[in-house]
Image 1 (tube, rainbow, N blue to C red):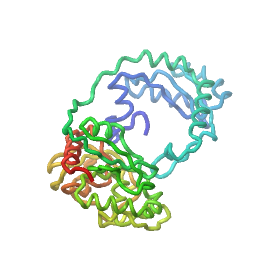
Image 2 (cartoon, rainbow, N blue to C red):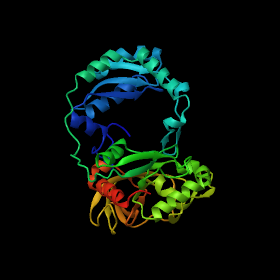
Image 3 (cartoon, one colour):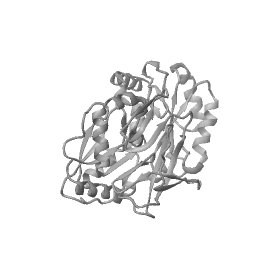
Image 4 (cartoon, rainbow, N blue to C red):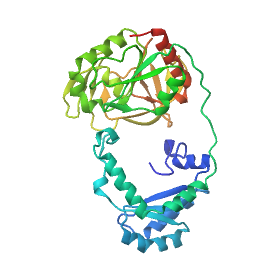
Length: 362
């Protein structure tokens, strides 16, 4: 998304609104591919569209040293903004993308070498001292997270699925669970044979289970342990990929269907296009353990795979007013495509931790 792109085609939640809120200086990164003085019009458009724009300098991306040296003075004269360096195309540092974004860091075997190369290039072609000076001139950022108190002294163990198949987590979510009194125990549905010892709560995050469907399906010991735990009443949150993992079956990227945990009587299947994308508000429509009826919390969706079993425990509302039913929630389970940020509604996370403490060891 661009600098001014926010919710419902407005400025809310845009990078510009963030800069405005914290009065941060902004360095605009502009692609110089197949362009010359036209870049001045583009840069001026960004810097003059809103006042103040907070834009204090420009970096030209995909730009050779020769082109940068020819354009630097002209662009500064036309825009009144300093050019703070350039970055050439480095094919050897490219990171591949796929249907939900970039390939994750754990899958890139030469990531360290790529980062070293990028750092060396930055030292050569970016105005590092000028960038640091701009950063030091920024005003202090004030603010604090909500005050969080422990809801239990029992230290319940919440097992968090963490491997190449399940890797979409907000670090803040895990930190909040710890503040509320939980212990976090990571495990791998791909490789481990059972949930961590003493598990009393389960958190299955998003990721790419569809790309590892065969391996997940072959790990029958883990599938059975997860199935037994959830059906046995263990408090569980399952987001997007974690939601699909709980299905009867899941199609991989080739359209081959594999058995999953079988907690939910549905099939996850591949689609040809993006199904849901963007911010939503979730309102509980049916009784469940973590979000009382009528209570709501922000969330977002981003997925290409779909399900024959979408649920109707919550109503999702887009900023433009569109709505749909989603989420399968019960006395111990909250599962669906929405991704949740726990700090947006700490009471949801607190109920999860309290429920885990009350469940006891597994």
